[in-house]
Image (cartoon, rainbow, N blue to C red; front, side, top):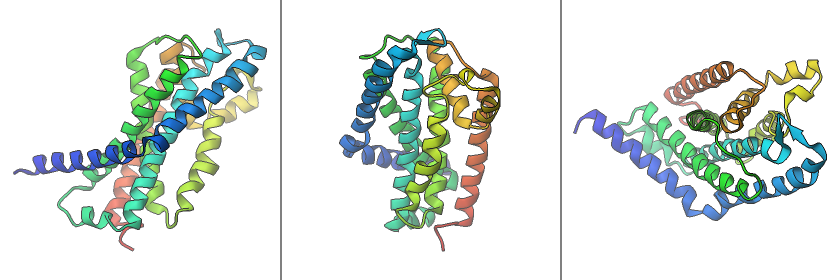
Length: 258
């Protein structure tokens, strides 16, 4: 059996393990984002939205749909990888991968693929929930799918890096709580940055989540505060940097061999 076949089997094994892991506890991994999204629609969409009126040419309920979907995708993709890889370290299962003839990029691709899979499943669930509250079509299926997958990949990579550096269970919750959540809530999920004063609009441009949310919103609604070319450039840049950094950490055994 050649190396390419071995790599394919290794990738499929890791990916299958990751998918079975979160699907086995679907009540904890898939259902909560749907319930949370429904609450967002009831509180922000139905109650507050009626007072806000239209935003970006759409009812407020429809305007927040893309952001809520992507917010769930971001959280789920990140959480799946950071928890799975950290527990592999904690249980000393990762050593089996490190001593096997499996390239680091296959290991990384397997875990990231699992994060993307969970992001896709949760994204579908949240989308179905949103249909009960808003009548939203798809402006561009290709663009929507592209941003959907690329965002999942980016935050799965971020979760992988968090897991590598984590030394305790507390460490895997610090970044989601103090970094990921603020970036997401301030990333234009619930508002258009056009409503902000000029200074805060410029500050908002430093938030990478803003580009993903607006590109995804354009894919669904056809409106965006950000240039699509710039958004894709930012997303691909972050993916490239995080991929290189992740492979470098694996090669050096940071947080694993010591």
